Structures are given as structure tokens and as C-alpha cells.
Amino acid sequence: MQYRALGNSGIEASVVGLGTWVTGGGAMWNGVDDAESVRAISAALDHGINLIDTAPAYGWGHSESVIGEVIKGRRDKVVLATKCGMWWDDARGSFHFTFDGHDTYISLRPDTLAIEIENSLRRLGTDCIDLYQCHWPAKEPENTPIADTMAMLMKFKEQGKIRAIGVSNVSIEQLEEYSAHGDLASDQFRYSLLFRAPEADVLPWCAAHNTATLTYMSLEQGLLTGKVGMDRVFDPNEFRSNEDWNAWFKLANRPKVLVLLEGWKALTEKYNCSLAQLVIAWTAAQAGVTHVLCGARTAAQAEQNAAAGALALDAADVAQMRNDALSLGEPQ
Image: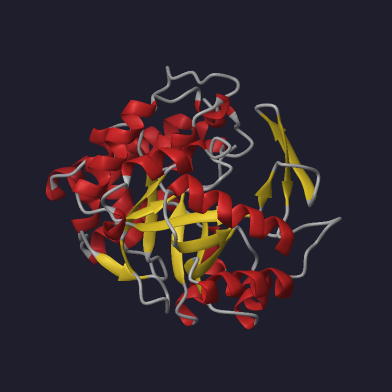
């Protein structure tokens, strides 16, 4: 496993991190087996992953609680990242969505943040969170000023409740403002071979400002593993059935992706790796990318993802994969 700095925080985290959205379960993921989640998290830690990323909104606290149980006795081996700003206790903030019976709001107000930090510390069974990230930026009608949010996060840092501050899903302008009002260590956002928009702005900005990047959906919810064939049908409530979020899952577009992946058979043989490991290694090799978050339902998936953290691709192969992906064009 390779380890890289989380910006200027002084924290070293594994290049491959464990994303735990699926650990929260619920209809969005067509359920989850908690016992298997425990095995997956344990396997990730056993095979060199020390970065675990979660959020209160993942299963309405369930993901954090499962992680809290697993890391008992090994907290010092974990770089623990969670989030704030998605709120469902009451109607404070700006309405975001309704899911699994919860009306959810974006709230980066100091008063709700003060409640959230204590809830996360309790569920995770720790007295300090290594990386505390704003899950989504504030929005109208209650668009909490970034200065107010950062002042509260800096207070948490001074109190020793968090070690570093991160953001997620923000614009360049918001990155600039967060950075101007406090110590910003990281930015988390969607990025993959099939979704390269951050290369135009976010990745260069983060590289220039020594800001760590945590990419998510870099395997496009399993599509880039080669295991989602033409016969795969997703439950209507499951996240992967939302073709507006990822048009490559449409049956009309999947053949292009499958042909692309089949063309990399020689590369998987060259590096003695799976397609998923090849894609993770490609992502980690991109300019500005420091950490790649990968979900895992099973211990085997976690172990395989971890192995990608030691995989170094030749520059020519990295370029070939990019050119191959560019040749797909845009999904229909």
C-alpha cells in the first residue's frame, strides 16, 4: 500500500480508502448484511487500508455505528473520515430530499454542527475525528455563510474534536472561500475514467493549493469492474437504477463500456490484476489525485481493492487507458 499526505494536515492516509456508503444499507443499496460489512472493514484494515470514509447520512447513522464497533481496539490504526451538513432531526437548513422516510436538509449552521459532531463521536466510539468534511455545500433558502461554518469547524479543531477539515461536492469558488476562512485539508468529489469533469478545474486547483483529493465513484458503482453485464437488472429503488446519475448504466450504453474493458485484457495480464484494480491504479495515477475511495460489500472486495494501492502503472499504459476511454464519447 502507498500512503500520501492529507493536504497540510500532517496525516498520512492510504492511497486506497474504504468508502462506506453501502455499509449504511437501506433501500438505496437493496439492503446490507452487517456481519459481512464488519468482515469487509476488518479485511480493509488488515490489508493496508487505513482511510475509512463515512457519513451520518449513510443509513441515518448506521454506517458510523458499524464502523465504531469494528475499530474498537484499533482506533490508532485508522484515519477516520466522516461528514456533516446533512440533517434530518428537524426542518433547520434547506430541504434536500426525502428518502427511506426521512426528510433531509442541508444545514451547515453552527447550532446543528454542534449536535452533529457529538452524535458522530458517539456512534464512532472515539473522542476525535481525523477528517471532518462538509458533505454538501449550503444552499438557498438557508445559505449559511462559509465563514460561519468554517469558524465552527475551526473551533472543533481547537477543542481537539477533529484533526483536519475537508469539503465535498463544492465549486472552485466555494473551495476558494473555504480555504480563505480556515485550514482546508481536502476535497471529495466524483471522478472516474468515465467522469473526468474535475480535470478542468478541481484537480488543478487542489494540486496547486496542496489540498488532498478523495475521489468517489471511481469504479462507477461497479460498472468499471466488468462484472455488470447486459443481463444485470437493478431494483428500482437501488441507486444504480438511477440512469440520470450515471447514463453509462443504460442498456444502450453498457456495450461500449464492456468492449472498452475487454480491450484491457492484455493490461490485466501484464500487471496480474483485476479490471477493478487496474482502474483504481489508473485513478490514483492522475495528476492531482491523492486518494481513491472504493466501496466494498465483502471482505474479498476489500482485500482486492487494497491490493490496487500497491500497483504502479507504466505511463504509456495510463495514457492508453485514457485514450481508450475518450474514444467512447459521451453516453446517450
